[in-house]
Length: 314
Image (tube, rainbow, N blue to C red):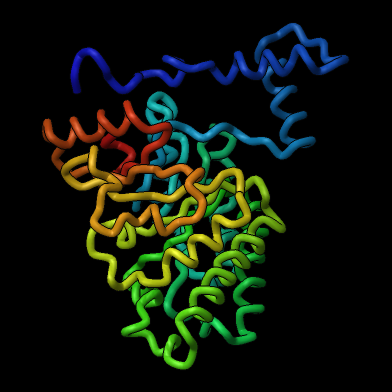
């Protein structure tokens, strides 16, 4: 990375610190008289959490990793130092129909990470096992999503990555392949797919309105998107509730300046242009000058970035 601009080695550089923000809030809280700065911070955070459900602000870097929560825990100080405080745990990924009780085994380490201001994101795979768009079985889908969100909130997860492009999902959006589109018109398909996306977001918001939501499309934001005909309608449904903390990822290849300049002009298909695009980049096992340059460009030009890597690499 250049000497002029380097990724900060401390989360305090170039932005207001968490302690300063808490102090400003503390001066507005009537009746709180504490002399220790540490006591003041703890009291304010406790009150805000209990009264408003507020949580630790998102960090600059979102780590997308195959590591276990224990492995991430071992590198927690380095992650906090570079503001990589949001962790997408691929190893904990569940499908839309997974029983919420399966999340319970992770509760201790997820809560421990949360106490260290590390925010855990649970991936939910929306697979081809979803029922046909126009069937009443979608009541069960929405209930399952709601149950997962309820349990994830109880355990301590800060949000969800909705994976819409796993190998078991990408054909879900392709009318030329998937028989679910055979007996319905194009207009109706657009409407019902939009509605199903909206219902999933409603199911999450009904129990966890503060949740961080990341839509992981990968394929739809790349130049070849023929398998994703109806993805845009589904995503518009997700975005239609104007959820406060919702983002869409876009993979970065060799040129970070062309992250969204694809032949499909995909953003023109999305109704809400106010949501935040988060660039997604895979860090190679051996980091060279080119990889370093891409990471630095993304770091300098976007409020948040997603890096797929092991925590020890950062």
